[in-house]
Amino acid sequence: MHTTLDDATAADHEGLATLVRLLAGRGVVVLSGAGLSTESGIPDYRGPTGSRRHRAPMTYQEFTGGEAARRRYWARSHTGWRTIAAAEPNAGHRAVERLRRSGHVAAVITQNVDGLHRAAGTRAAVELHGGLHRVVCLACGRTSAREELDGRLEELNPGFRAAGAEARPDGDAELPQELVDAFRVAPCGACGGVLKPDVVFFGESVPKPRVERCFGLVDAGQALVVLGSSLTVMSGLRFVRHAARAGTPVAIVNQGPTRGDDLAAARIGLPLGGVLTEAANRVG
Image (tube, rainbow, N blue to C red; front, side, top):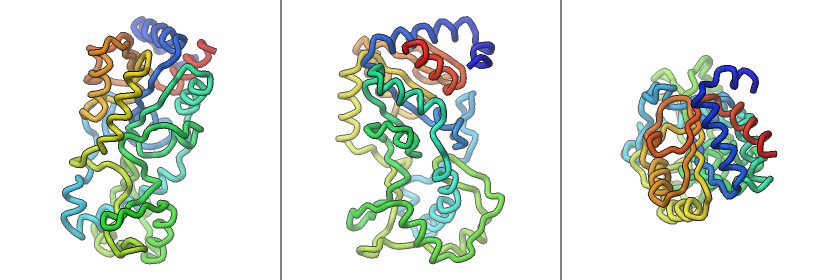
């Protein structure tokens, strides 16, 4: 934390003081994004400038539109899943759970699909975009564990190797086309239907009950704290705008500008692990 504070601007110090005051008042709702997981070794789509630094992810329409797209997705995901599966919660996730246990954080909503909040102990975190640890059949609706599918894909693709493959966000990876073309995809074990990770793809809507639950949590909160999200997509920004319209204070911790900065009572542009650890220490 010493280095983080050494790098802080006057605005960062002021923002941290405001964040601590909000947390001390209890009842805070956390909205987390990909920036919270980068310290666990999981890449994010956007750098500190907020501009995309990786190719656009596959859309729902692409995935459901053809077998070749699904083969491409699962070949890359089978490789990138290892990054997700091996990742461990970082200081930021642990600080959020510490604040939840002490009653300062009332609820956690995450845009992340990596399951790291759950791994840190925050079992009730609402996974807005779903989770990569589950797989769903588009035909019969059966859900199953990703580990189960991983084993089946290993059997179907013996010796599949992607040495040196570059990890991408959300469990994706960059692969040579010849590896993609040779990959065999597993169907649903119950009905033979198409399997999809239980996550919300681009072009797909978050289930309405889940959205309504999140709005309810924001309404019940005393403050909304955004962690590691540029709020580029409306999926997260709508909660910030909703809180601001209701007069609920908003604090944002993110390295780089966000679309919600003009609505924030506090803005901190420092690494999340150090900031959250310091904030948890200050509120006790």
